[in-house]
Image (cartoon, rainbow, N blue to C red; front, side, top):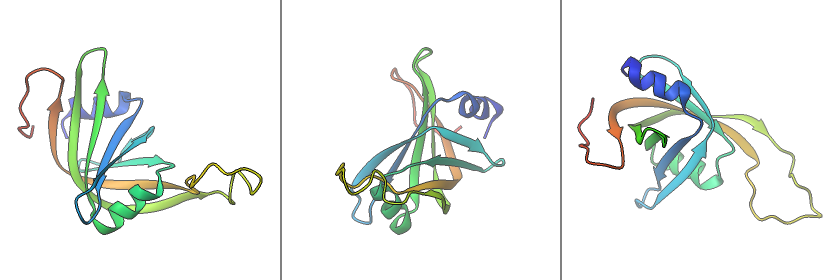
Length: 130
């Protein structure tokens, strides 16, 4: 990853993590805790819904995007989840007296090996890896 991409990741407020199940059904999640681990790996931590966890367990290929709307510019990272770690667990929150549906009970950190990075913008652009 170039220093420009690393700077964009460090400055990103959120990242969008796209996964797909083993049948190719796409799913999108959001993460706020973005870390650059080394030249090839990044991690994203969040209370991902169970669908994201199921998807990456069966199909580790993901795409991640960070976006700066002010400058109409961002990056897409394509790679593979190499590790999915539970970092925190809730004890059946919010409790039996409230039913909010299937609220995630585990915070996960997804470590991703970045295989390619591409510029992302709403105007004309290519998907050529940089």
